[in-house]
Length: 337
Ligand SMILES: O=C(O)CCC(=O)C(=O)O
Ligand SMILES: [Fe+2]
Image 1 (cartoon, rainbow, N blue to C red):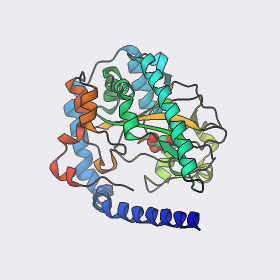
Image 2 (image 1 turned 180 degrees about the vertical axis):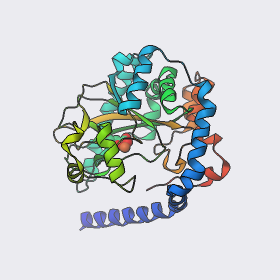
Image 3 (image 1 turned 90 degrees about the vertical axis):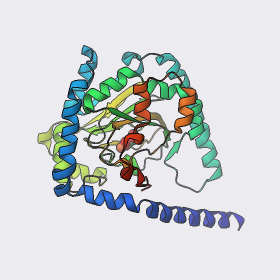
Image 4 (image 1 turned 135 degrees about the vertical axis):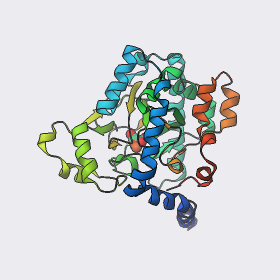
């Protein structure tokens, strides 16, 4: 009886939370409804976006040859796969050591959650804010100026950094949430840098994205840009003339994937055989298309500042990007749905 009561109470709390999320998200949904209109976008937002790019052009960073290759690949394919080792940013060894500790914590978090809520469907288990801050080297690595420059050259605009999402994807094989094909909503272009924290094979939940030709076709075929597309529907859209449909990022621990998740349909293929542990760092422009969809994992800025006192002004501006948004935009509460 006691157990049943607990389940019922949890269900009620969940439902109340859902209503609350919808109410808080109402202003964002209304503004989004307006910006979604092609008419308004073409006359107002899109010209501003192009103007910002033109204004910033002379200030774009000059890249070394090998970094320019990354930008070229992102431009044409939307994806570039490498590894922490080959990317060779400073402090890569420390980064992987700390990331390894994070992996252990994710496993512990998962164990505790399954013990506490045995009857619940759990798909993803995230690191807590404290765990992320306690492993600040993870953030330090992802703020490296060379990496930011690569992303800036691709976005053609100053970079906003939206923090890491460190999580474990449970191997239940279910096509749920980000395991269905989708495009991210934050901006017109954005980059996610994904680092695998364990070896990932085809059944271990690889990140996947559509190849450009098929992607163009699907973008045109799906009327609502942000509607999720399940595999069965994706299969029905595919024609042999597209050639390879997708890139499946099978790779060892320490694999790094740079991916434009706004332009390209992507997903985390549902893991079947083993849990997948990974970190996803998020980057977009400092005046993103939909600021109210950003900051899904907000950073406690004061603590980041305390723990990373040596950040340059440019790095700090990437973190504290919301400060430069117009006041009216900052008033729109972050969407929770
Ligand atoms: O879990 C995954 O691999 C997908 C994550 C994703 O869609 C995203 O970070 O935008
Ligand atoms: Fe996504």
